[in-house]
Image 1 (cartoon, rainbow, N blue to C red):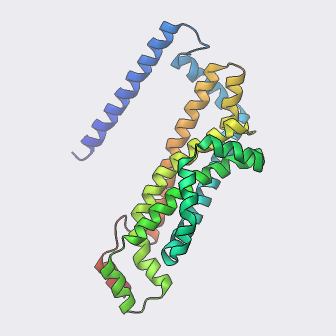
Image 2 (tube, rainbow, N blue to C red):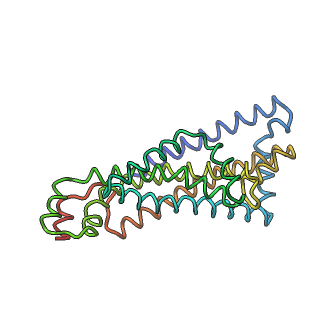
Image 3 (spheres, helix red, strand yellow):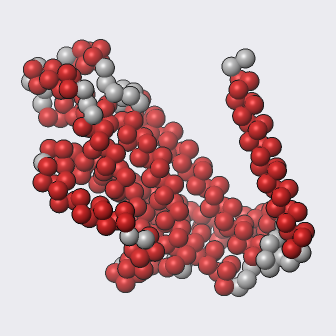
Length: 267
């Protein structure tokens, strides 16, 4: 009985995918010009052909490495920055104008500026970092500030060290906010990173392959590489969220605020 809703959702999702594939096929037949709109079958053929090439896996691995480097760097600095901003309000005051600029400016502007400042392989890392850092910083800072005041007072009353306060009170409070930041940040990092690869024409990258397909008017390849980007984005997001859940479970952190019983155990 419990599996029926999941099965129903899966069937609905599968039917939706089949519907849009049918729409795509019909549109391709109506256009009747592969240069403008190749059929799903043609794209699948090119995808299978590309998957048999060493360059395909090198490009996929290179893009994943660059995006994950930027993402985890933003995750680490965002966590540290939020902790410092909570402890020292001047840190938040200094970072606020920078965060506002990052959120307001177009991604393409940062990519083009990065091309002036750093080498092509580092541009996707820099861009992914820049897009994720504000999300992690603001979410974690909000999570820390939402900690139960009663628990904070109890921690002070029992003379918790700053590390113990962070580990047993503030971190459990920030856990759901951090999880949300990872969910939204990783997708943004992936899109921004691949876009940076396209503009920077980075070697051994998905973005570089997309750029080459566009230059040589290989539309089926362009669709195939785009499908790879989408599939890897979904898979990467699920993988990172799974790792986050395992890490939180290892640290005995629930995806909710710490409750009084948890604190009592630590006392």
